[in-house]
Image (cartoon, rainbow, N blue to C red; front, side, top):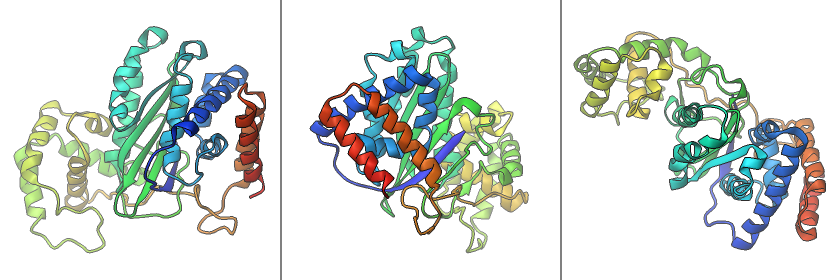
Length: 357
């Protein structure tokens, strides 16, 4: 299940080498301790927990509210365990930009160390990215995708999108252990400080729209293109987020032809098809809602604050008990970690400061 979303301000530049090298050493030792004490599955749970992940970034020494904490922490973990993945039974793939596109090949490259077919993990990686870029259209373009997995097929995802208009990044946490349905309420916690207008095809309230969209994908492309062209001549309601103005029906013809020929059996199969992206899903959702009356959810899946929220309870209260438990867990891991005295003292000081907030 997806376990969290966080809004973080975009910061330029990158972590200096001296800092990243120390983050890597500390991250390596903390992950080793967690795996030794609790097993690799616990490491996945911790990385997929937005409270723990943020506390982890603070302990490693990165800015607590910066978008860079996502890419840098994931990079430090990946680099830190690179030579000991087989012994740990914990693997890391993906990363920022071009590195994210190498995730499938990196997973496949660990195939000899896995007890399951790597194709299942590749599918999970691909679908989690598809969901957060196409099925949930919230204005954030994914640019970072980190995939963590164990030799027996457990997995977690930490990925991040960027909104160049409001200059914020949004982080998406996934934990694969309990995923039953990629396209219906796959998350257990979503957190950020504000809500926006979205197209949320993974909301439970979009169930009928998912069914109708799949059925529409079975129709001849000529019929779908004609219907979209007709909609573009209508007076669209001002409140409606799902815009049709940037949809080019003629460019969708090729995709609709592909869906017509393959006849996907459900929305997950439709979403997983090559070439089916945000505009295809938006066009089908429009037809589902405006022509067939299948209501589409426009609720931003935000439940409570994470990055900035509020000792004063505004805009949402922070769960202090869970946050304190995350910090305490890290304190114990740092205490056992075999790193330099300077790094360990620095980590303790940062954790102590967080306890006092």
